Length: 115
DNA sequence: GTATTGACCGTAG
DNA sequence: TCTACGGCCAATA
Image (cartoon, rainbow, N blue to C red):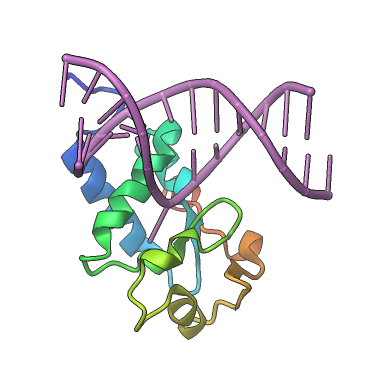
């Protein structure tokens, strides 16, 4: 009852990973959407922070980009598997570290999972 | 316990 | 249209 409006940090991280893993192949989302879905839209930075720890976990973090569709976190990915390569492997076109038709490929958990 | 940083987002000039 | 600044939360030093 201490946190009625938002989840505990442990659940927060876990939920972030869950949502990221729920992202359909060939789709992408942004930090704000996930944060909003978790109820912490204002803490969208925390989503990125959680994902920073997620690179050591088995989740398609490469499907998560910023609101500009820019692969801001690609520098945090291992050089052997760049973010762009992973995205292109799923049919997502990436140009200049930016997702093409990001607006069309955008996947909002607060909407898709809310149906 | 305080200060700084961070895979961000939104608004204002 | 582009640039600059603030906010908000958590982790790390």
